[in-house]
Length: 208
Image (tube, rainbow, N blue to C red):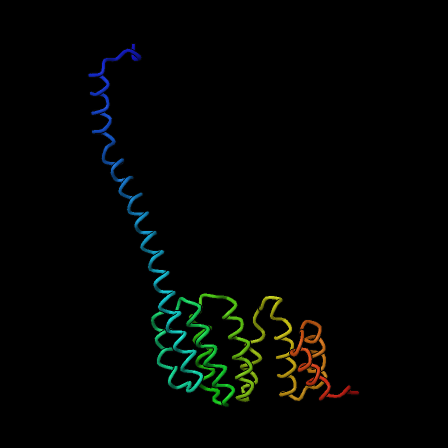
């Protein structure tokens, strides 16, 4: 007989069902709508943040052509307000490179440590570690540099690590170990990097 219920009976059943389940249905709809708007807000926020960080980085690029000190204010703004974006890490590494080229190793090390501590990208962290090791080596902090390169790195970085090991062995007056490290580095290096490593290797001679 349930197939032949009157319209009134069906309406009453629907009212009873709605009384029991209506609240959860409304809540589900509200959550779905909220999720949609929340996702759109997050997407818009991400796009806005990326655009603002990109604009700041453009200012860093322009200022650093004439004065790294003038660019520092915008670099700090990227670090404080946009640390999660790649632009903050790239600007910091660019600043570190320019400081190092000028022989200003302390601010170079500070910029690289910021990347290591704050970047969300593993590749930036690996590269910053390697560059920091080079800076520390230039500062005669050989043991600290050696500690950094004993960490685990992806295979793509192995030639850089082996070259750096060779540099550290040279600083420690271990020419035999340095030659072996440079030989290994040359196997994975390419182009001008390989030529530079070969030059370092040749400067050590063949040993005995």
